[in-house]
Amino acid sequence: MISDDLITMALGMPGARESTHFGKRDFRVGEKVFMTLPEPGRAVLKFTRDQQSLVLETDPGLCAPVPGGWGQKGWTSLYFDDADGERVRALIGTAWRNVAPKKLAAASLH
Image (cartoon, rainbow, N blue to C red; front, top):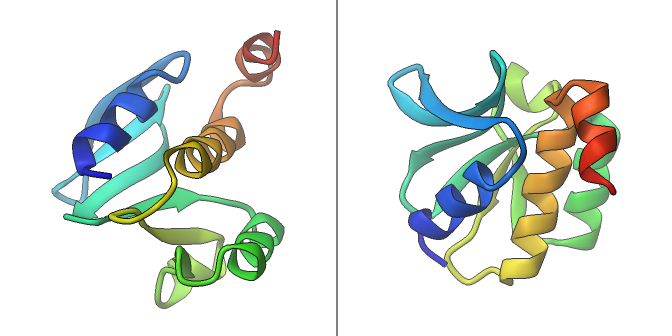
């Protein structure tokens, strides 16, 4: 996968838009960030701590906590170069649902 694939997936989420965060590309719903692209081959996703623990257990090597306090809050690096597209889409969807307004998230399930 390449960054353009993730950009397409992120912008395909309802209400998503591209912006910048600390000088890096990010993807938001409203003002809430659900994904950033800090460097080639790596995205950062907004997970809960429980979601982060699960993905670290189920997808070793695909994801890692962001170092420091951000990682302790659930922010998780996704190394997508050799990743399965459907798995990446599912992870982006989880991050999106974590920040999307409840009505928008509920409507996207139908």
